[in-house]
Amino acid sequence: MKGKIKNIVSFGKVRMYLIWLDEIGSFGRTYSGPAYRNFDYWKGLKIGDYAEGLEWKEESKKILNADSHTFVM
View 1: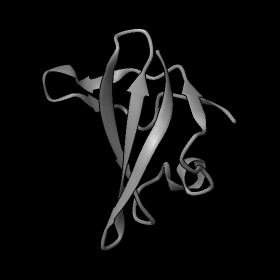
View 2: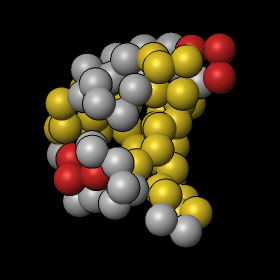
View 3: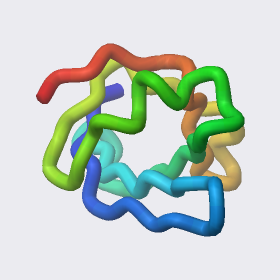
View 4: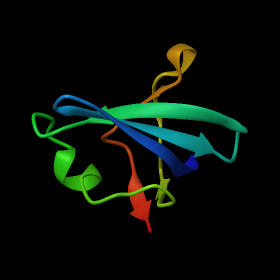
């Protein structure tokens, strides 16, 4: 899937990325932070950036796998 980052919310050392998924017309979210192995991929992204290759980690809860992506700025 491909999506556009619509919001980034910080909770202490964790960031939640809210992503609009064009293909399904709905939001998904994922989490990252300095303690996560994927943080280097996510830390430079900002609202309005795109990510491709997104996959569900837990579709029923709308949580995306933060390790499945290719960024398209």
